[in-house]
Image (tube, rainbow, N blue to C red; front, side, top):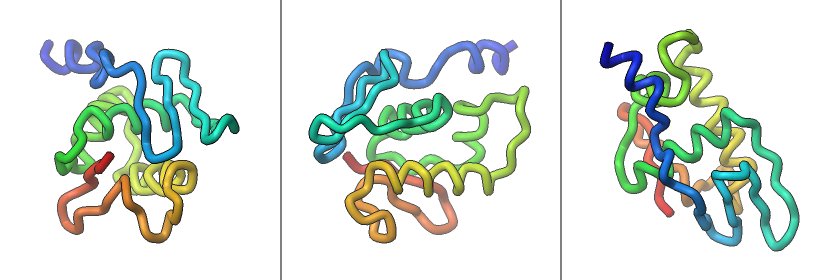
Length: 114
């Protein structure tokens, strides 16, 4: 029962707007822009970004992300998380190879720093 309730409760659901550097993100409308230029995110990328932003400063592991963002119905691998993080970095980081916002905590997971 708890698993069903957890899937139904969208983590970060109260989070509406966010600014990451020069990017403005509206989680309600799934729109983002940098200096007036639209940035396209998939629905899953928005969900992952919302989850990370909702846990700013916390280290979240891949299992937490899989459970909270993907849910139990789907069975992606933890490598899927790495691929999505790489895509997010391409879109929000000034230098994706030297991330400042979505950090890898080796052996533990990821940490969002606003």
